[in-house]
Image (cartoon, rainbow, N blue to C red; front, side, top):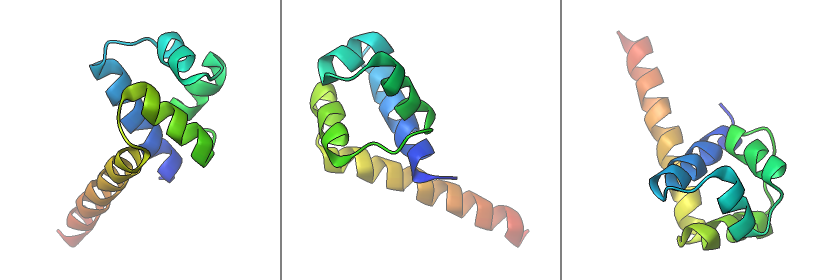
Length: 86
């Protein structure tokens, strides 16, 4: 899976945890709602500026978003390795 998919999952989880709609969070981040939906689905690669806008709207650091994405990637990789080791 692409890091875009994991990044989108992290953004969606945080948005839902903050009880925000896509439209509300996109507005807070100064992004188009359609584009924001594409970020959440992992179909676009957000720029560093966009990552910073999303992070600010979620009150987290850009590095936290990326670190959480990496955590998901590593967890998936470990599950995959365990499944193939059996």
